[in-house]
Image (cartoon, rainbow over all chains, first blue to last red; front, top):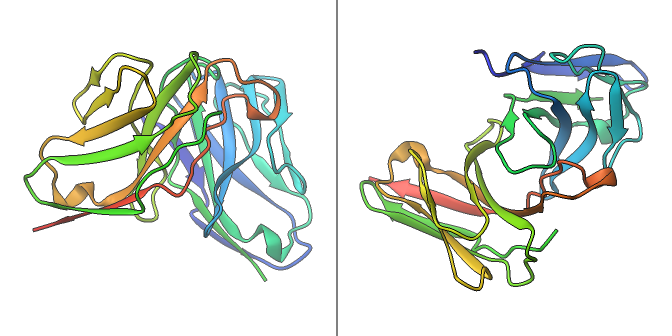
Amino acid sequence: NAGVTQTPKFQVLKTGQSMTLQCAQDMNHEYMSWYRQDPGMGLRLIHYSVGAGITDQGEVPNGYNVSRSTTEDFPLRLLSAAPSQTSVYFCASSLLAGGPGEQYFGPGTRLTVT
Amino acid sequence: DAKTTQPPSMDCAEGRAANLPCNHSTISGNEYVYWYRQIHSQGPQYIIHGLKNNETNEMASLIITEDRKSSTLILPHATLRDTAVYYCIVRSANAGGTSYGKLTFGQGTILTVHP
């Protein structure tokens, strides 16, 4: 298994541009989520999904959209990039959201918005 | 979810056991204790979790006190590759809304393993 993969690894955007961060997992996990990590802020949950066709907001969803058309993929879209969205983005997945068990994280996408 | 308190940093000699403490005095009965680590620039990595019994896997052991107010992660034979930030997380299995599935990462403990 490849686990959780994320592309691209690095990205530089200009303010106002849009882009999609890709996330895929090959473990048939129901639950997928997106976090952002900023210095001194820890990881904060952006959006999550409990299965194909079902998504919901986390604690910092503004400026981001998600969709879950398949079990494997959970892309994160930045609608109009802002410098405040400069961060490291991690995608995670797990078999079940609420139950005990491990969440698997991807390697991250480092985004800079100028 | 209950708040956790960890020391900001610890050192350990290579080959020795690393014992990382975590205080979670406000933990409630349905909350699990999870440990993750993050090696520089990588995504967090799951280590182990438990509810009230001690747990062991190929990576580590988790010792939870009888009153569940604190726990200790033990890396039995630390290597240089174990240098990372270690996060103790308490999470309810029943969290809903914007917290569904969410892991709350605090500041963690920076473990430095030296030769």
